[in-house]
Length: 257
Image (tube, rainbow, N blue to C red; front, side):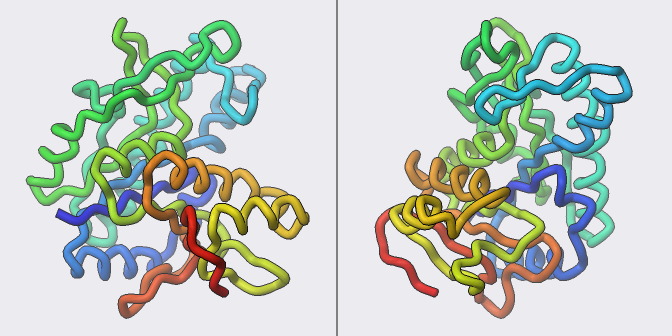
């Protein structure tokens, strides 16, 4: 089986359009089995604001106390996951939501309970749950909530969750879906960037702003065993006639524009 893991950030879910889903269909027709992992930051922030809870971040990770965890879990499983599953169904894809803690799908451990609270890192992906869905011809749509050995639910960064799922499945590709076409260097879309290129462009200031965390997540993926990561747009076709549209990030080879 050939796998592609697709990470959709919460901020881009409402911008996914028909061209995006046409690319999904083309990948399926080529025999790829797809797995989605999604975030939900904007929806979580809205709910925290409603409950008058101030969001806190440490090194880019959401500090998660007991109340924040409950809100994040409710939003991710009850709103964001439903939203993405329903969108896939509207475009005639069989999709099923899977909460990351269900069946110990995403087994996790605390990163730093004192500093971050109930925030975890994945130590094992139980692919049996994913395969049960895929063998039934469903696309799994996974929330980034893990579960620790002691039964405690843990909030997982969605980028990191997608990377771990991709590594465990030995996926051919891990896609980070964003609201831009990819990485632009000197005004031109770079079709591919090596890890060395990315670091150099960040140093020069040619990769800046909101693109930095996106490429850093991609670098983390290739550094930890994913062959390559594509940064693609959710607002247009990212795969057409066998050709990728976006920026491929990988570890060793030189840049191609």
